[in-house]
Image 1: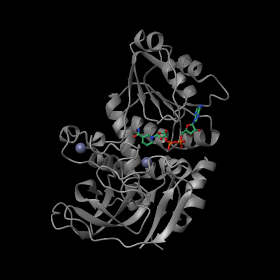
Image 2 (image 1 turned 180 degrees about the horizontal axis):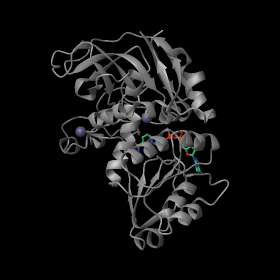
Image 3 (image 1 turned 90 degrees about the vertical axis):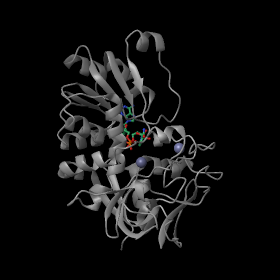
Length: 356
Ligand SMILES: NC(=O)c1ccc[n+]([C@@H]2O[C@H](COP(=O)([O-])OP(=O)(O)OC[C@H]3O[C@@H](n4cnc5c(N)ncnc54)[C@H](O)[C@@H]3O)[C@@H](O)[C@H]2O)c1
Ligand SMILES: [Zn+2]
Ligand SMILES: [Zn+2]
């Protein structure tokens, strides 16, 4: 079968590889769509998250088939699989976890202790186990979630990035009627805004330096868009809400947006970090956090949320469909996919199909 395998930074090869039969607790998926994520770009450009030594759970090193945002159809069942049947349409939760450590037993399998690699390799399919930029993938059956009836594979491929923001929403404990500000209108910021609105947020401010991205937010119905290159974002938000917002979501990941997020968070409010920061940042712990009673909460991936996320996507299919801006084939992955999401802000979510 065809697969896009990464050998290291700037080295992705579309190759013909064999796929083994699924293990006893796995199913084999015929991949339909796999979304390109910013972290695939970082894997490609800097080798971020890739296993340089054998991963503690999978034992895998490079090369690895990239791709972790995928949907597909079940075509083979491992011996012990009882929750799925051949032909089922599924979305994949691409987490690698042992299922036995303290955190796994608590349900926090996204923070599996055994899956933590010393070299920083990600505990996800597409990083430390073969992922979805391929014709087929073998995945643990418990991590293959049935799509609701009538949901197409394109929307199914959005489950993974939507689960990221759903986890952030849960951790921030947003309640209907609260005001929020979102830093960054990339795929994650836009999905965050959609979920905040669905959850009943009142004011939703979206801050981004890119006019193109802000237009996309407006296309999705968000009117409070702010370009900090043109106006002081904190002043604009405080002009409307003098006390600030209940929750600021940081989905850009740079010092400037962190500073704005902190400034606009109400005394006693929550600063919910979603972005991964490319470099260390500084802040005044005592003055700006402790004395303001602001809590910073981080999040990584998700746990126990795919069924809920698939339900939300299914109830709002037309809205989420607008996040998908392009579909390409596997052969076009690097030139028209990975390179393009870094160069063209028009692109929000590019889906890759391994089918001809
Ligand atoms: N926590 C998790 O589990 C998790 C999962 C997936 C992605 N992420 C992270 O979420 C973040 C967002 O992902 P994405 O795919 O949307 O990324 P993206 O790069 O497409 O979006 C970031 C946006 O921030 C904007 N931005 C950059 N600097 C800015 C500034 N100074 N002021 C205002 N806006 C600015 C950019 O224009 C861009 O639109 C990334 O850091 C990514 O690594 C985290
Ligand atoms: Zn991703
Ligand atoms: Zn574990």
